[in-house]
Length: 415
Image (cartoon, rainbow, N blue to C red; front, side, top):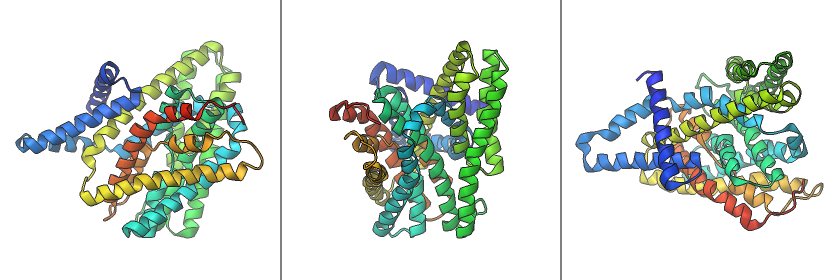
C-alpha cells in the first residue's frame, strides 16, 4: 500500500470507530477510538485462532508492520500535536506554575527513570543501562493523551496548567534523556552519541538548541504575522512553522519536540495578543483544534492496532504487570519530590500529588520510542511492557482521573 492508501484507510477507520464509540460506548472520543480498535484487533486475533486458514491476523500484522509507527509519530504527527497543544497553554498561566513544571519536567523525569530502571533491572535481570533506557521511555507523560483528557476533565485552572505544562516539557526532556541513554547503552548504534562526554553534548545540543530554535522561529513568524491581516495566510504561516520548524530541528539534531512546544507557546500567547486580529485568532484556534482532534483520532487508532506488533508471552505479561506498579511508583516520586521541595515556599492543594500522579498518562510516544530501539534480546520485552502500561494508562487512568479529582473535592485555586 502506498502512503495515500494507508492514510485514507486510517482516516476511514478512525471515522468509523469514532461513530461506533459515539453511538454505543459514549467514551471520550480518543479513548473510545482506542477501545474500539483494541476490540477489533483482539477480535481478529481470536478469529485467527479459531479459523487459522483465514490468515486474517497475518494479513493485518503485515499491514500494521508496514506502517512505521515510530517514524510516523516522531518524525511527522508529533510536531503538529505538540504545537497544537502548546497554542492553548498561556504563558501567563505557565509563569505562575513554572517552578513546579520545571522541576517535574527535569528532576521528576530523572527520578522516575532511575527508580523504574533500577528496580526493573534488579527484579528481571535486565542490564542496568538497558533498564534505564526503558525507564526513560516510560517516564514522560504523553501530552497528546494528557491534553485529550484535560479537554473532558474540567479541572481547576492551576492544576490543569501544571499537568498540561509538565506534559509538554517533560516529553521533550524525556526524549532527550532517552537519546542520551541509548547512546550509552547501545554504543554500536550509529544514530546516537556514545560515551559520557558525547551524552552531555547531545543533551545540551538537543534541549537548548531545540528551545532556542523554537523561540527564534516563533518570533520570526510572529513578526511576519504582525504585518499581515489575512486569516487564511496566517493559518498557513502557523502550519509552515509547525511543519518546517520541526523538520529543521530534526535536520540540525535539535530536540524537535522542545522546538514545537516553544514555538507554539510563543505564537499562542504573544502572537495571539499582538500579531492577530480577532478573526484570525478564531481561524487559528479552529484550524489547530481540528488538526489536533484528527491526529488524536488517528494516533489512538494506531495504538490500538499495535497489538499486532507486540509479543504477548506469559513471562512478558508478568513483567508487564510489574511495570504497571513500577510506573505508578516512579510517577509518584516524580510528582511528590518537586512538590515537597517547593512546599516551604508556597501552598499546594491536597489533591495536587494524587491527581497529577494518576493523571500522568503514558501514550503513543512511549510506544514509538520502544519501537525505535536497536534490535536486541530485550526489545520484545520492553515493547510488550510499554504497550501494557500505555493501554492501562490511557483507558483506566484516563477514564477515572476526573472522578478522582471530583472525589478529592474542588479546593480554592491556590498558586
